[in-house]
View 1 (cartoon, helix red, strand yellow):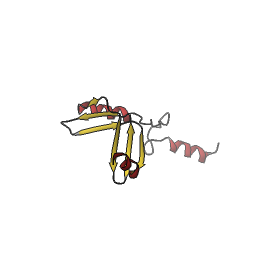
View 2 (cartoon, rainbow, N blue to C red):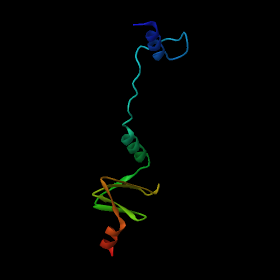
View 3 (tube, rainbow, N blue to C red):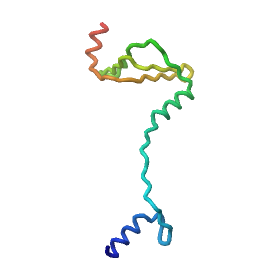
View 4 (spheres, rainbow, N blue to C red):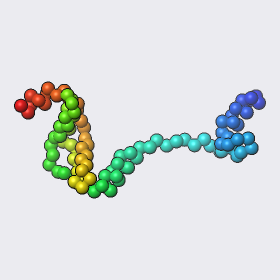
Length: 101
């Protein structure tokens, strides 16, 4: 190994300026997969309750409709918050307008 390559390797693991201690191992950042648990904790603090017996939910958004079949619906009346979770499908508005006319 030549001196230049050793200098580059030494600079890559140095945390501060000249004269600082080198770290032993480069820390690998962990992927944050706890978003779902953080969301559930926030919902628990807002005192949402599961509403049983809902078979489908349609959310009308302009010309598009978001359709949930067998969703998990949670609601909190004091916080005026509704949570709809599950598998969704986006469909055009004409499909549902024919169904409900």
